[in-house]
Image 1: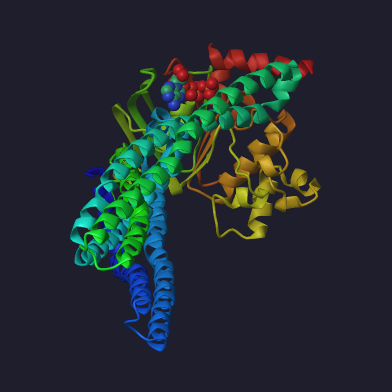
Image 2 (image 1 turned 45 degrees about the vertical axis):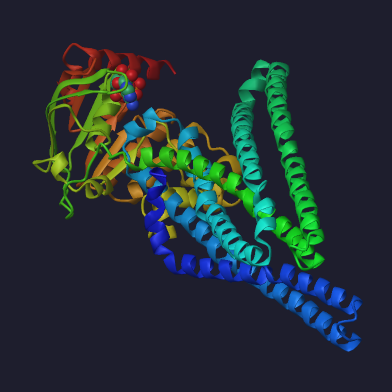
Length: 585
Ligand SMILES: Nc1ncnc2c1ncn2[C@@H]1O[C@H](COP(=O)(O)OP(=O)(O)OP(=O)(O)O)[C@@H](O)[C@H]1O
């Protein structure tokens, strides 16, 4: 139960609902227990009428009184049971909501490294299935526990008063019932976890084959894909059948144990009646109702125990994530001013997971409003420089200064808000084009969106779609071409009008003519802003105030377009190659 203590703060938050729910539960059980006692009274009235101890009119009025009590008590118990669920089960839904938000907020706080170390499926499971298991503890488990305790205590008091020895024999098989249900619930849980694993394998496989349907069709491997699906589905079916076998034992076991208890009551009760130890046959009828009333709550003891164990395991997995401290910490609460001057002083950086030293002693300086272009072969460390400016990782050696102040001493959110970043792989959400562009600036007007799209040279493409800016992208909508995606992503970055613009090879999928137009627009937009353009093309770099060339994490060339085309090296080589390609086309 140690892990589940995490939920105490939520129980405290909803204490009023819980206390009210508990009172209602106890009251509901008290009313429910009117039935057996009034059934007994009916039996006694029948016996007395049969013995002619009471007249017909007294008999009728006693009968009517008992029936009215039974109906009223059942009605009141039913209404209270409704409110019992409305209070306690609702609390579990509130806690589920709070816990999901807590986990989601934590996910948002955690750094990129966390996402590299944990698989998406695992992150999803903890916020969905694990939370559902915990909810079963916070709601049904608590409700059934209160219910069982309340019913047991009240029923035992009545039963002892009526017939103590019979009570002893009646409750005798109940712990066995509880144990059997506990064992069964555990086995059911074990097998249903396996079933869940297979279901998630099946859905991952299906999802992947749908996403990659064009590749599957192009290679003509539909039969192989279908046969892999078939074997996965048949394994899944076997696990389901295994589960059904254990589940099938649940109710027969309950019926068997209830039957045994009923027989015991009839046998012991009958003997006691014959011996004159109990006054009326009505007591036997009363006890048979008690047995049937107590069976389900007692069975739930086993079920609840298994729910609590599952919830404990799930909360442990949740707590593991909740306890993680983000590697990138914001240490400054007040916003810091960012105007865009960036300095790298002897910066080295190694990725934790791969141990690759991506940057080795990098130093450069960009003044506010300047443009820096970074070129270099693939894997030379260009994107890493951009990630470090956004503080997606903290460096191991050297210093990065923004406005002359160490990057860690800036307010993290302020720093990131001052950056417009266009990644290498443009990621667009399954939403309208407009919302995808506004993502960088929620309060942007339609005119702002259009202007940003015009500057990114994508406006003309967008208005050709039937629904224009309201066109839905992604799975539910249309698929943009690589170049269109890149340009929507550029529009998203420039609409923010940030102090720092980072373009990570984001013009690779557009033709050189469009590239030229975009660069011209960017030139206008980025006036007064600091820009860094990562590229494989000299055409994207030539107008920059400064160009650096990276190789294997080190700066091997540095200068302007003019100086670099006049000195031997990667840049001149690339320039000549690209010029000859352009003139050949
Ligand atoms: N998230 C990461 N985790 C681990 N290693 C990484 C990560 N990102 C990059 N690397 C490694 O760091 C090195 C530099 O990568 P980086 O992405 O900065 O190169 P790049 O110059 O931008 O390449 P490209 O032009 O292909 O985009 C590479 O060897 C790469 O494998």
